[in-house]
Length: 381
Ligand SMILES: *[C@@H]1O[C@H](CO)[C@@H](O)[C@H](O)[C@H]1NC(C)=O
Ligand SMILES: *[C@@H]1O[C@H](CO)[C@@H](O)[C@H](O)[C@H]1NC(C)=O
Ligand SMILES: [Cu+2]
Image 1 (tube, rainbow, N blue to C red):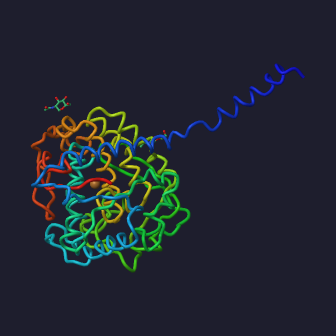
Image 2 (image 1 turned 120 degrees about the vertical axis):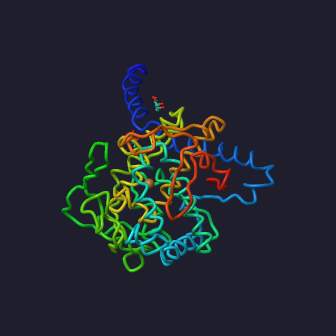
Image 3 (image 1 turned 180 degrees about the vertical axis):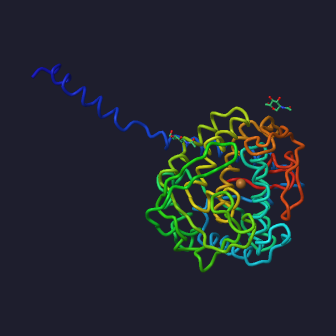
């Protein structure tokens, strides 16, 4: 056979082999996120280096990914969460009769302000301050020495059951829920957005191993966002277990390329909010949805202790995005002051107030735009 014939026979095969695997876009996106995070860290370290008041290099709290905490650090965090749930509530019974614990104070605040702080201009600043208040309570009321960890769901987008957050070991935040077959899909009704239907996934019942199992953890408030509503409009005492329904399908919407799409693709805060949160849920929504059940109920979603790690991750993305152009991106506002602008409300400004009920005095949006100014002094590691 002539060489040219041989080449003609082999070439199509070579073309085929080269075309099939290709570069992995998710691996490339993960690298890109790492790079942007390093740039952000360098910027923060550079700006706080010379400060002698407020946020300094010595004082700054390093928020780390759950899986990169030591076992001891994870146990300390879990203990502090239990501690908060063992202290009595400060919420007056006239406001939220079902609130029993200090942890319920936090859930209660979220219930009261849910219609204003989701799919609105208050979404990012409210949740930044809310997570910070929780971190502060763990540290000041429960002797926790560390920072609030985050859950980087891009690491386990293929299967959240394998995440260090959910693997059910003593160093996780508890397992999946017990599998319950033949369940109906869950209909999620959020005012002014299309009703969404989520098929049942891999769990559905009470979580069965690790921390926060029914013998150790109890939810007291709700349901409110998914039927049937609990006693007294969901504000009454309704003790029950924490449930989960981990979904390796919904988690496919929290992959690295979903994150680079917003970090690299959004030039303004409106774009960022929409990519994170609306109208289909964004990566913020899908972070909740892939946990399932308790997490579907937006009002009481902080009842699952993973809420705080998920919202730290959302805050981390906002922070990394802001630091790509800090002068401009820490002074932007977007949106109105009601969820989906329902009922219609004024546009948010830097002077718009955000309220937290019993857990803290009100702040203004401008008080929550920088993670190293005002009350804040933390960095994502
Ligand atoms: C994430 O990316 C996948 C694949 O491109 C896409 O199907 C999905 O809609 C995205 N999800 C979100 C929330 O952006
Ligand atoms: C609110 O903001 C939108 C979008 O930027 C703008 O079109 C609208 O005129 C603003 N409304 C008021 C009352 O300022
Ligand atoms: Cu929320």
